[in-house]
Image 1 (cartoon, rainbow, N blue to C red):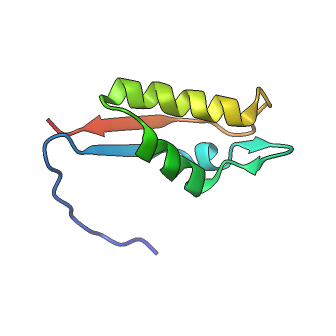
Image 2: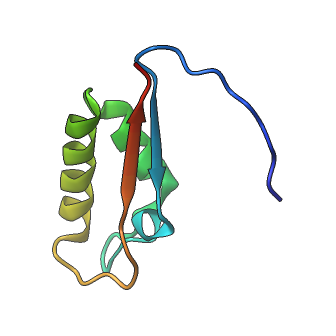
Length: 81
């Protein structure tokens, strides 16, 4: 079920959008990357958006350890000025 909600972003706030290929990224020993790992990685990431993207890509690549993925992995990071 989708919920239509409006939020106000303050200057400096960041929004991270991603495809399900991120949370479903897989490693035979580690299982799925999951929303919990993604949330922790976003919380630990620096600003600005370009640095957040680099950190998230590095984290995901370290987790999957080069294992071939079955889905696309896409991030879109927005920062309110």
